[in-house]
Length: 117
Image 1: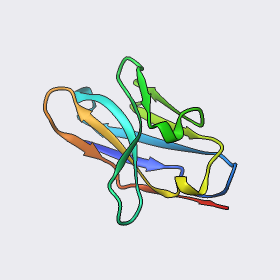
Image 2: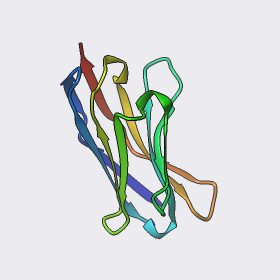
Image 3: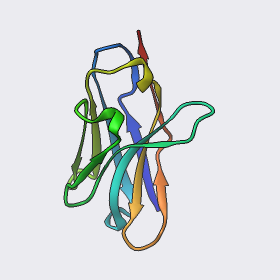
């Protein structure tokens, strides 16, 4: 089992920045890729950014150039630096970790990000 705890969400004005953090605990040796997803009410959860254990990253087109995902394998943490935030970035952001050995996916409880115009 893996537990994920997010922090860093909040309310920010358009153009501002936030940094989300996610700390993993439990069976951390089983963790492979990690990422951040977001979900608006009534919409599907969508990938924002992902990062492999080796540090390879991928981003949704809507956040390229504004968001940066990073990872600290020693601290068992993944971060999302969000700059130039827009009202359309408003959502609940979820940390995700994939198992290296099974098809199991783990999720955090979510953290609200609200960007005011």
